Length: 388
Image (cartoon, rainbow, N blue to C red; front, top):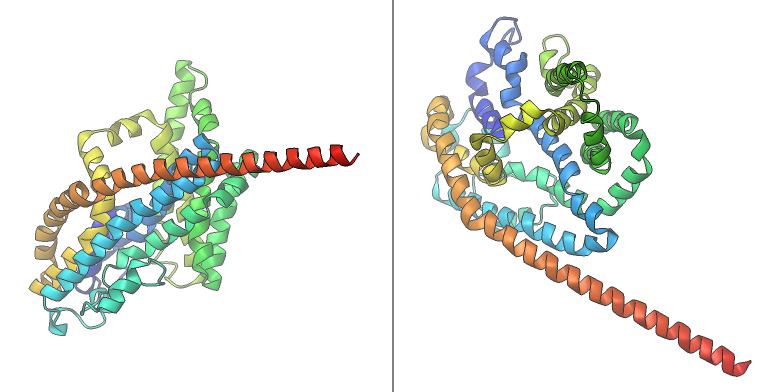
């Protein structure tokens, strides 16, 4: 939902951001962009929270099943990601083809004009379907799926390193934030994003000990103290996520200082995810019916909302961004539910079947190769005995 609000924010930006003294304290733009309210539209930052969450959750099958489970896991994981992505690309291409894209409908130089395709070329759709491009224009949110794929393929290496650093997971997470700063400074996306996944993997391999620590002493005073420490951590983590925005009036975007503040976002993301795991009130809030429903359709919503919003922008004009939001948000939620039911959920079931099949095949091949190796050893032993 934060990503959806972020894209509404981007559509409205040409009409909300003052041309002079934009970051003046007290202005409407300052309120929605440089205060904690920015958490509602911090789209890129919320994707980093999702990267941390992937780092925590995705390794769990391998931690439970061992290294030999990786092949089956990877086959299922790729299907689980690619099938909905391909359907979303077809949906995006269909809307681009059906809804005219006149340049007069959008502000020149605006985010909508710069980042969204105006024609649905088959070659472009096919290229974006591989998820290995640096940028995407039919459905620009797909940039993050490229890193999900890379993380899934390289997961055994992430897990091995995380296990080696298990005892030093807190300083290792801080080092991950430093790597993201280096990635920003030298313009290397791999350093900017993969350490965020690794921070989540460090949590994953320490998950049981983290939970054991949280469930330590049961005295009322200890529980109260831990709860207030948890609330303070959650508040600080949320502020770290948008630190670069809150200091934007003093530290302009594109400067080293702004990049340094931006490197705090992964630390904030880690803190938010840990609080969601450990703080009972937070867990309770996230377990309510509405958050659970949104969580269930979240991937489908992420994949499909932007083509809807952009189509509405070209229908009504970006000047009518309020109308785009009023129609686009409920329409996106409704379509995401249908997409989840008829595309994503079936892809889950297919991925589970393929995972089981691939795991069985992998085990069978492993047993056969081991039996062949043992047979060769026995043959060699008999030959050696006969010669002697």
